[in-house]
Length: 632
Image (cartoon, rainbow, N blue to C red; front, side, top):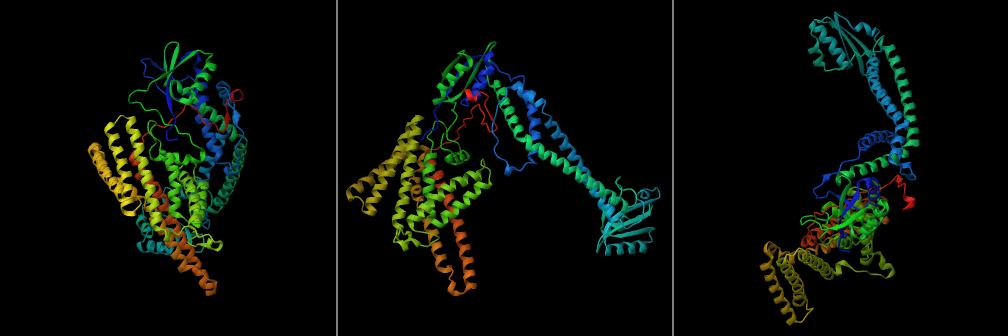
């Protein structure tokens, strides 16, 4: 329970002629994390087919990306997995899959139509702006005159005409009303005239009249361009409809084919991790100990017994990869641990303690049925809208367990959005405000137990690493913690007679001195033997604050219909808003503090982390099944 999976390093000696069968079986088994051997042999090379697979994978992936944009993801059902094809059959099948080429052709045609529509749209804007001017657009290309077109307001048109007249510039201004306030303006002037500074001062929006789509009179051009845009849109709809049909008919097939290609690519690249001789190959890697017999028996069948399997010792500085096996609903805790730092394979895995303690700490700090149910609903909603492989999703799944705990503790403490409604049926529950001393003692006891457990784990790790002075120091720390707790319990709370209490105090001081003498740098942590257990009192503090604030909100803002409908609605809004704010604050503090007590007060006593994740040579199939699955 407190250890990750036991790992064994193995070395496999196989014939090169059995490479495909061995690689296939290792991949199918998914139990070995491949490592390159340190033997002084030649390195293996990837299979000849790898480049062809890579090229085809890129091609298929591109087609999938196009078709996915034309698929209603929400309405898609999980397809029935198909059998994995042999590599030759797979490549032949993909080579004759005409729909892939058609998808690329339609995608390119749509891109061309998009570009064309963008140009036609710009041309339509110019033509429509100048539609009221009776002039052939072809005549705007002259060796003598320059032409510019703009969008202007009525005031800008008048200012432009006035300024041109005042400066004596030889120019003609033709205006076409676009709407009530805007005009399309065509300015014709002698090429030698300087008009740019006039135009800049008025700051109009210039129109590009040089586009080749602009020919004939503006009104005629606008009509022609409108027809071309309509034809463009019609063609786009046809092509998009074809892509939707292609997606409906082929997307699942292509996803399955891509999965097959990815699997074959993994198999082809695996040979680069091998060592080879003229006729043999050496494969090394880490395997869970409980699966070594399965690995041996499967390889025996795959090679007709033509292989040797040897258990080898890891190098002095070599660390086995970390593999944890927990129920799927607890995987978010592993995700969070990995996000922090993965446990090493040679140390105690504290995740189970975290799994047990987090809901308890969080539930105690919330202790309200209403807040618990609301946070459960909110966490459930977050899991529905976030990526299952992301931090938000996994944090929300952990939060769900904490929310359930908050409901349980809310029932025990008789808190429902600050109200104690169960008095109606005679159940009083535990009143926080009347049990402060007891709750404080319980939370500090939690701290003593968890910190003590952390010290014990530290002793176990130190013994494994043969750090004898550290074993003595941490053992003395544990004695200090236990005897000091007993001394305080007897001296201040009368739970022990005076004589034994004094003996415990003396023992605590003596053990503390041993800790300081043998602890080296860790001797500076002796103050944490007091502060860290006391830090757990924050559970009581934050829980009490949440309950008191909820109670004050109830007393001050509970709506009363007798006060009139207006006051009732006003107080109801304030009541809901304040409870919502208190709930959000309580939830945030509950999550942060429950995580902090584990990661800071508990983990620091023993946890190193920095493990290497176990990455087996294999593939989690979604769209395919192994061709030999029925025979396995």
